[in-house]
Length: 380
Image: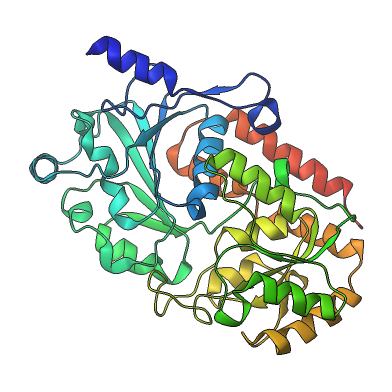
């Protein structure tokens, strides 16, 4: 059995090309039952359960980026494996010890995923500090009650500012808002050569759902439209492909979940998703209806969006055609520069580093690269 586990671990160690993570960089990637192994000697352990679907690829990429920049081990919890009743009982009876020398960051797609690290026996006395970061934090009704009774976390970051107080009350842990981001430094683009006028990524309202009809309507107005592209299964390749596509586009079509709801979106809380931040990182302007939330107002800038005020294609397309006619390469440069300053994941990770109390020289060095690039772009 031990030989089998070693073989599985070796086969699933992820090696990324220099274009993504640096020449010859191998990330420790351990999707095995013993999640929190000490194999790589990392002081920080990152735990992440990969959610199903390509919509989560940007978060999976971010988790891998965090592991590299923190020089941490990334431990992936297999889909479908949940903390059983025995593990929950153990946690509730034996509150987490504080004597461990290691620290742990749990990147959770949903509130329930904060229990992912409980699957490893012996976790209770191993970590001196445990911090969580919840992406779909607006599902506050799903916050596990066990988080508070067992005192599992020292701090929990969320992506939606209005939910901070509720998270603190429900978990007993300090909370703060770290909203969506993008890898602007490595994948962003200020380039002015963009042959796509309007790009479609992801789900759209009914009027905009038919790519053939959209292309015909755009062609009638002299616009070049790019519809759905094939899904790429590998998260890193998927992220790269989308960022390259953004870099060829002037405008992206996107609508808030309030304007374009479905069964899996929140009925009242509005929020950004990856396509907004990744597009802006690539210099794209987003055309649609902007979600309304306090953190979004702090993240974005007036030139980031063209507000259509409608989900009707003909009315919206008239505004898009006007915006395309007035577009210039300077618009892409401005969006890229603002995204570097506000949206790069490294700014979020730096806040986590402060709470973890762990040195992160790679992260610090890349933040200095961002500052230098912004300094070079001053006045542009």
